[in-house]
Amino acid sequence: MTDALLAEHELAQKLIQCPSVTPAEAGTLDVLDAHLTGCGFHVTRLPFGEGADMVDNLFARRGTSAPHFCFAGHSDVVPPGAVEAWQTDPFAGAIVDDHMIGRGAVDMKGAIACFAAALSQWIDINADFTGSISMLITCDEEGPAIYGTKPVVEWLKQQGQMPDAVLVGEPTNPDQLGDVIKHGRRGSLSCELTVYGEQGHVAYPHLANNPLHRLLMMLAPLESGVLDKGNDTFDPTTAAITSIDTGNPATNVIPATCTAKFNIRFGTVQTAKGIEDMLRAHFDKIGGDYTAQFRLSAEPFVTPKGHFTDLVADAIHEVTGIKPALSTSGGTSDARFFAPYTEVLEFGLVGKTMHKVDEAVSLSDLSQLTKIYHNILNSYFHVSA
Image (tube, rainbow, N blue to C red; front, side):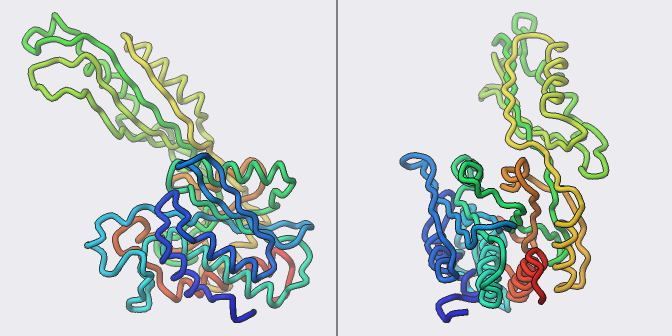
């Protein structure tokens, strides 16, 4: 490995020092571009969108033949929030008590740094490997996710560069490094339900038509928060009502309209169409004038247990001594964009502090995760440790 290539601690610090609040690139991709070019990768920058909405993305590949393995992730981060509440500058990457503190430390600049460090170390030993290795990094995961991984995956498909296997570096571990591999995710279906009535005086309800009463009845199937029992792969389908609003500041006026928003997370027991059809039938049964705008942002997906899941689990166990569980819990991730085309798993750092004040990663976990990614490359390309 040349002196110009950095270890995971230095890379993580450099990335954190770039204030890449979504969808800003803020220099993160430049850091990775320089590092990967130094490792012999062909780097392609892939901006999508127009004007202020434009998002920069990076795809870097070394090799042209199969098999093709890809590390994927995002360098954009959520805002730091109340900066004065942090013990250090959230974009300094300060080291305190063997922990690196900063926005994105675990979600997911730390894992990206481990990707890059593992690649440089591994290629230094295995420069003549057979196959291809790539890295895909987007700046649009924490935001709308319109101009990031989704169009890049479409570009890969058009270019004939779709990987055979993908590992996304999301912080999958709840307590300690090695706990969990995410091998799938539930789908996400949102709805904005607006119910129309007739405004009137609260003392004369018979002269008005209160839409709130009908809205509450329409929301009844979601009240328990659980819509099924799940199955062996997915947790139960859950529903959360996130907003009810009338825009009515008065206490003595029956409103003319009211709106509720809710989200449903579902596995393969349900389908988005089935859920929507069921709810629309219930809304129609309640009756009256209403509109329901459903938006599907993610379908459920799963990579079945097999060679790839075993390979990653073994690499984790070799470093940590822990046998990770396979899970589909949690929210959505960019893994959903790869799922229709290739095997995809997620494994990264411990997620306890993600999106919080004083987000932090232990230096030990960074070193161990780099070793895990190194071991995954060994196993995937059948190279002796």
